[in-house]
Image (cartoon, rainbow, N blue to C red; front, side, top):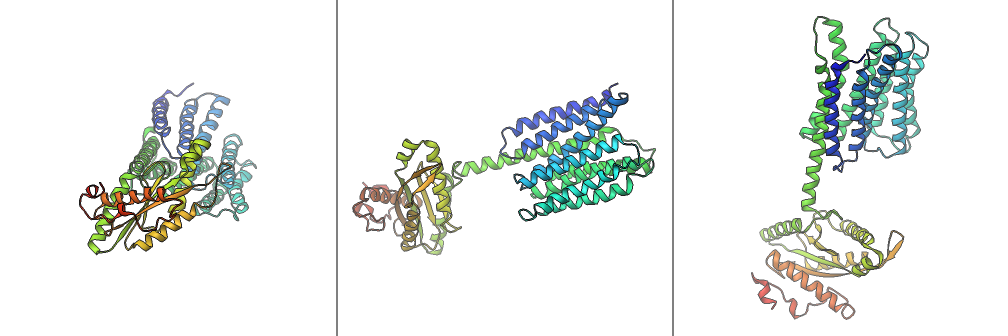
Length: 442
């Protein structure tokens, strides 16, 4: 026999899973694949429950598979949201929760009431997570991990108390297991997505509603037996969570697109658009306060040779390495941008005199004097720097960029002769004060 009344739920969740897959495959969210496996488990849960009316072993197998799939999905959702998921101990915790829950469900469904296996199965619910946590306490001690241990130790105690009650014991125990799993999801998602967005709010509230289905439903049946709710009412939180997760992925994709609009995708530094905006704001603040600001234009030497001889992959790694070096040595208030293929720009916020700019330039170029090892290859590069100071060298952003650019190329030409970007500028490098600086450079 097949319960076709559950087919619409299976169809809707299958369509939601396909929609989730189409969004997740373009997502940068590392959890999206685990979420997708979780939703496949939910579809499996509904599909298995269609065969519950089947006689004998087929009905029992459907109950076992459907309930286990529901529990596995919740544990996967919970595990996907922990920030330390890549740790070995986190995988051990996943295995501990999966095995303890599955073993208890099998014993509860197959063993007769009061069977001796129920007690060790209930104890394992708390003992296994606790053992994993204590075994890895030296390398990882996180609030979420201990919260999981507390939840499952409390569940273990509750199961030992109620599972042998005549009549209602097995149902109470099963609902307690499912409540614990999805209440844990609620807590983990709240911790992982503590932001005021629609996706985060809907997902957390959806998991809270999903967990309470296993408390409110039995309570309504026990205290208000004449009240009847359609099964779709109890399934509603599942659909809410699915929509919330899709919104979370879309929100993160939008945020990533906004980031890419203002940042270099390779290095994560400000791109030219953001650089020009920050330079304009820096000069405006310096103008209001009557202070100085400085611009450093840094061009990597021998970068083309690295690209040609070792390949673009090593060239990309070199650019990321240089970007990390520069960001680690300037003030948080300053801006490091990638404004060209192998060109970096540094905005030194006020106060920034020419002496300050020279010190920063020397510090950054010295970072590149030592050999750099990338992918088993040792490369040597240098840098040519052009410095322009506002308002001494130029009175606006465009003129300041031209002054720094010309000084950088002058530094390249003078390499080996003067060898110092801090040397007096050639006549071409006279301070630019005109509103049309290009006319003074002809």
